[in-house]
Image (cartoon, rainbow, N blue to C red; front, side):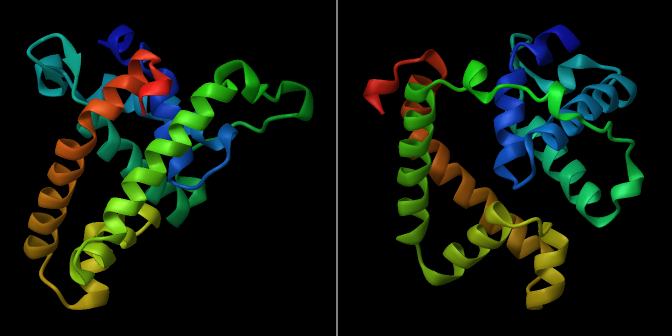
Amino acid sequence: MLERLAKNHDLWLRMTIGFGCDRHVAEDIVQSMYLRIHKYVKDEKRIMYDDEEVNRFFIYVTLKNMFIMYKKSKSKYTFFEVRESDAIDDSVVFDGAMESAFSRLMTKINKEIDSWHKYDRILSNKYLRTDYSLRDIARGTGISLTSIHHSMKQNKQVLKDLFAEDYEDFKNGDYNLI
């Protein structure tokens, strides 16, 4: 199971960096996620689609929750200090074409979110662009957690439907098609 997870290591890193943390913190969160999955997921079918592909949404939610816990209590996890000499050269992982394609894809997604109705736009921005959990948003707005969960589920499905092809192009390295 861990071998299948590790095949998408760069994707997990980009997801975690997208939450707003530094690369070395993202590395630690992703490594902690591997340990957490190994410890708590005994049946690998729980995190797989058709026994072939990792359920990326499950991993996304796990990483998002770990990032939120990290932000709330930095002492909750043990993160290793990174010395200047140990820093990873980002150009090895992210080349110019990949970075440009990722930026174009995120611009398209952000433009779509900005065109939504105010309620959906605010919820999506609060959840996707900050470290607020659905419970935090519910507490702060007075809207029921169920309603927020349902709205976010629909919003994510809309994004999946609209950008699945672009995401596949990105994954396959067809950056010029995005």
